[in-house]
Length: 462
Image (cartoon, rainbow, N blue to C red; front, side, top):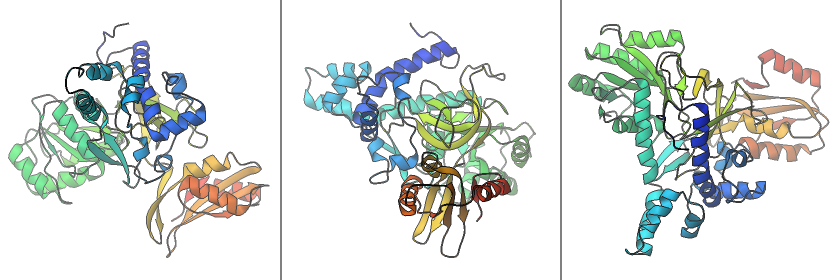
């Protein structure tokens, strides 16, 4: 069936058809030519020829950043790197047509040029809790990022008459690159002047360009507002401040607006955000509308953070990067807690896009962790995954403690566990990234009392 509705007005059935078409064209190549997922497919008994629909995708176990950082730690084995034969066998029709068009030219050289355009990583984006994971994008991906940026600008209510100044530091991350693609995709006049920790460059840019839109990281919005006010540089025509971060609550939104309210009181605060591993920013169309997402570019799910089983409503956000040719993310566990996903049309703008509504909490199950040899990360979901599948475990709790020699991770386990404590410790370390202290045979009532005391099985006591 031919798709006739605009990208933001497709009904759920049409969204499903578009998703299925993208999966059928993309999933076989991702499964066949990204080493990490080729191995996962082999373990699941799925061939590239079979990996063509949602049912096949959902046979893959959701993966964490730690899973993708096996090897050199950069996430390189999640990058699609097909051979010519793999492209012929599994690539989308659009790629095959471009390859066919090279016949009669320089032959293999032309084919190589097509493959490089489609799949060669040209841009690397920092991601992950500590910035060591890289998301690679090809030339084809960059074109899609421009189009996605135009969509985000549209949802935010930006027009080609707007002038944008970004107060985001120039860096290879989603905050900066997403802002660049937003402006370029929507053909907005934009400046990205910030190269230092302070706002002097931004103040100078605002003073000279008199922007109608400012973009700033959410936790720096109030500081930017004060810097502009102190310099007498609040722009006269400022109408919108885009804050990069999860949607703020009403009180924070009012404080942010107040920081720029010396103009005429009409400055609107709109949030734009996505996990670092995404290539595009989701956005609010209005205060409290939720973050509008793009189901033809990314597939979103929610899972139980302890079991990774799909759930409705509150849970951990899982991301599949539909159709992207650099890094492939298949059922990637973002570590973000969300209240839920809404598929109802937005009451503010009428768009039928799925929206992330309610509270959004990044890094809910991933904590920074200081060791004697440097800074690391502990992934509490890994502990849950191991203990929930260990025979004999009745109950358990986890504490992160601070000390002069670095942080400590302590795990208390109730029940009769057959595993040797050192074997269990090794499995926990592989799953969470940190070697824990493990105490077995703790009375169940003591574990339950500890959980009740802090209100959670996880306790950050630093």
